[in-house]
Length: 82
Length: 182
Ligand SMILES: [Zn+2]
Image (cartoon, rainbow over all chains, first blue to last red; front, top):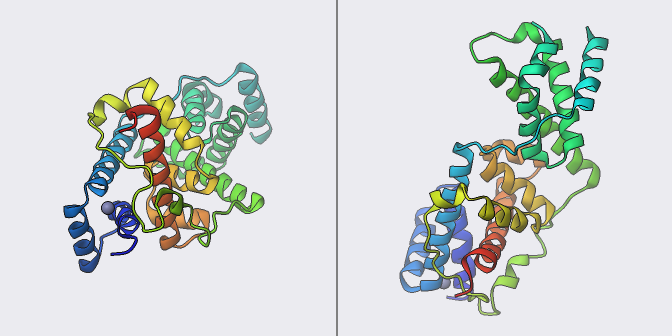
């Protein structure tokens, strides 16, 4: 099949975003069965996906705090509003 | 109900939250201010069945989305579907140009690793802007597709193409800068 890997990479990505149709699944899995590179790509995207969901679930906010000048400015704005 | 106290107790948290999304401290300060003012104007709507912080973060999420949406409109950030950058990753016949090799790693060890986060962040910075925005909304913020499409004014198909392009590029970048070439 022409452009097989290119197409398989799109389907691999889409499988995280939506339910693939029956035909798409057959197309993807038959290709994966015979293509080691696309299997690796598929594997890597799963790892990437797991890394991102890990990051989402273990909220890791940057260490930063609101500068005092900004605090003062915000207090001023609140005062006007009250 | 005391917005000065909200600032005291939740200001830093809101600020960090905004920075993690917008990567800009001046903008993040504006978001904290807008959030607190909006919360003060609408404080009758706070039902007390969620924590105050959750409520404030909820307001801030909307402010951030509004901001991104405005930014996209004003600067006309586009990523046309017509030119297909994924062809760079494949040869004429559709086979891989730079070959992926299976990453041997434990995801858990990576998301807590600051070095890795730095590399990942750098790889994301190299994405074309629209790809980066939708990919971040999807994978970092966990927004649902419908919301992302609405914010960016795109169709689901367009969204999937952008995310696919972002993944190809990130996979290659991480392969090069973290996992090593095969
Ligand atoms: Zn293949």
